[in-house]
Length: 610
Image 1: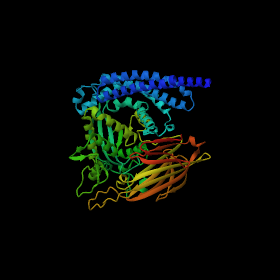
Image 2: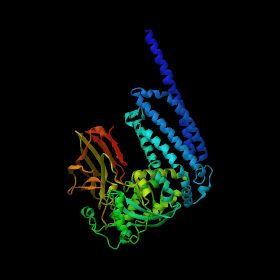
Image 3: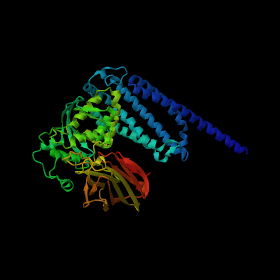
Image 4: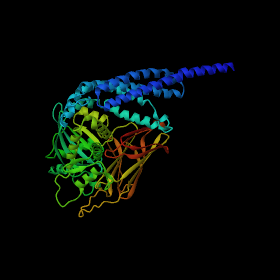
């Protein structure tokens, strides 16, 4: 009995001095860190770089004391089960340390130029300048700030490695009303995206001043892809604009209907077999139909083969595509915008159950009238230019933060694609997956590519969902992909004589499913034409064609066997690449008849069994 009492006393002693008191002190220090971090955030909102510098220094000091206190519980990492959670805690602490260090360097780099870029309380010089002068001043100071990018990237990369070691799957979904696992997962994914910009895109960031014309005037071709008439790289090529930029100062050179480019070609070649087979009443190859490959660079090869024949061609330094999601996001931030006497808005329009800007552009461009519409699609370039000028016309602290976030989001979600003629910069674009490339991958692979050939703007109304099933038996992987299409809206009035606006009609869908090279097709159900199997972009492709009617549904089921074996279920991994221009189709992942994950494919997704 006496021995039990002694043991109990020892356990109480250990609990108090090695667990309870350290926890109490860690919690107190953590609260100080949280308070200091909030002060940094407030100084950022106040546009006060000097205050932010002081607050960041205070945060760094408090974090050092917090970190010192946490070391008192690291011995618990050797305790079975509990040890893995302590290891995660340690990795999280390490990530925080490196993020703060990166922040300190960033602020120190900005301080000498804070008044120029409008990041100093009470500064009026920058705000008083014109929109063009603001961006020009920012660009001219950019290269001075970027000298610290290597140091910043080093700390960010270490922080990313620390967070990657944390397995969010082992945490509960909720504790009470508080979400745990989803928050950890989102935090890791968001930081990974930020880290990619600093680490993987470092060569691109270093070249930004040159890209913005600090060495010479640059010329960029902007292509507008209408995702409501979906094509392989994101949408039907409906408009183009030419921008020149010198020292960050943009100038709109031309904004025209894509048809004007096609009309500038004296002799068009015969349309490729894909168009002759699946398109409706099209026999010649036009620029507007040139984005046939799911790989953006490969599609640009086709684009350039025709563009070289145009009398309106210009030598460009890059091509950037944008779709309707970009327009809606910018209008959401900046508000209603007037162009040529027409108001454009991101608010919902009941006539299409979509943003007003989409309906208005469709109405201007697509509704038949009894007169010739000159340059009917040129208004898109004018809208883009006015939005750019409007964004630059405000104080940076007002809109630039949100617009920058939306810019990164739209690049990650492939609503914007970039191609640069500078090889080094282009490699960096592709490394951070902003270039619309079909990627090589060691493991299973899936890319579903839909093409609307003469089906009006029906992708505005058609929804698509995918079930991806993998059955692993003795190392052999048999796959089953189920694609469900649904159009719950009625047919539009497509009568040209009545002047109807034909938005919703039967979707004529050319379907290609890209899978690992060498995969063997077992069954393809749902195609209205003969199914073709071939190789493209170092993948095997299963090709079919189907129609989805207004108020109708359609289903495609594809079964095939992978060309390689895996030793066990835990070794299975899958890369799903999103098609540009798509909102984010719902996906359900099943392995050996067990549902493993359910998500919307808003960007490329790598799935691993855990």
